Figure 1 (cartoon, helix red, strand yellow):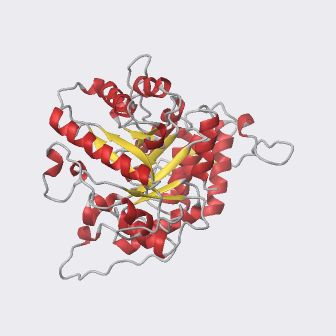
Figure 2 (tube, rainbow, N blue to C red):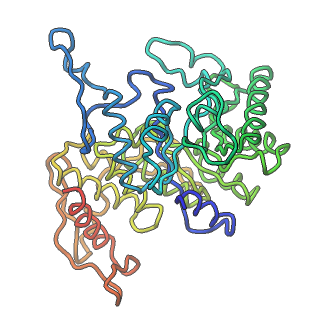
Figure 3 (cartoon, rainbow, N blue to C red):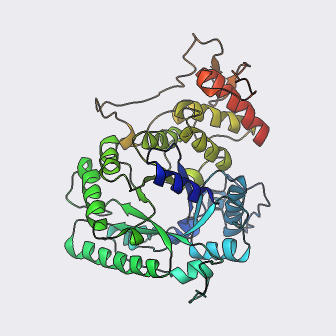
Length: 427
C-alpha cells in the first residue's frame, strides 16, 4: 500500500490521527518554463547531468538554472528516499518517470500530475498574464495522465501512469470570472468521476485586486470552498484541499466545519528555512494534515535533508527551531554554503507566520534560541563565522529496547541525536 492510501484510511477512521501527508511539487514547468527546475546549486548525487554552455555566449550568472535531465535526477533521488507521500509532476514528466521508467512501481510514494494550468500560473519571463484575472485552462487530459494516450484502455482500473491529479481554482470576486472557473471545475469533476480519477483541490487567493482586505481573505476562501463543495457528493469530492495558510483562526474554522474534509496547506515563496519549518508545524497544530511544498523544497541547499526535517517536525520528533539548526549542521558537514547564515535563517519573514492568534504581536528569532540556553547540561555552541553550528557530544536518553526516547530528551539531546544520524546518512 502506498503511504498516501494508508494515511487517508487512518484519517477516515480518526480525523485526529497523528499522520501527516507531505507532497513535493515538481510541476513548476507548467508555470515557469526554463526557470522551473530551479537554481543549480543543488544537483542530485544519482547521476547528475550538468548542462554544457558556450562560455563565449553565456555569463556565469546565466548558468543559474538546472536543465530538465538534472531536474529529473532530483525527482528520482527524492522518490528513492521515500520520505514524502506524493510527488506532483507535469503530465510530460509523469509520462517519462511513471509510465516509461516505472519509477513508482516499488515505491511507497504516489505519483500525481497537475491536471490544469490556469492562466494565473503562466509566470513566464516578460509575460503579463498573471496580472489579469485567472482563466481556466487545461493543457493535458485525464487520459494523458493515466496512460499517456488520448484514450486509455478502461477494461480495468489499473493504469500505467498516475491516477491522482491536482486541480487548481482561483476566485477573484468577480461574477463572470468566478462563474467560468466553477463551470470548468464542474466539467473536470464529472470527467474525473467517470474515469475513476482521484484529485485534490488547490484554491489560490485572488491573483488580482479583489476588494477584500488581506486579513479577510481566509474567510473569503473558506466560504467559497464550503459553498462550492456543498453541491458535490462524496464520489466527486477531492481527496483533500491545498490552500494558503491564513493563520490559526481561518484554518481552524475550515477544519472544524467539516470533519470529513482533509485540509492541506501550500508552501508559497521560498523565504527562510525557519519560515518553512514553522509553517508546517503551525499548520499541523491547527488541524492541517497535508502540506505541499514546491519552491521551499526546490530552492533548498540540500533537498533530501530539507525533506527529512519536514518529516521529523510533523512526527513531533524535533521542533522547527531545532530543525533549522540540524539542517545547518548537515550543510556544514557536507561543506555546502547556506543561502543565509544561521542567525538570519532562524528569522520569520512570512507575514502570515509573524503573529500569534492571542496577541497579534511579532514573533522573531534574531539568533539561535538554543545557543542562548546556557543552563542545559549539553548546550549548543555556535561559531561566529558564517552561521556554523558546533554541537558538543552528549548521550541521548534511550528506552529499554535501545531506541531513543525523544520525550525524555532535552532539546539539545534531540538536536545532537539528529545531527549525528543525519551526518551518518548524508556524510
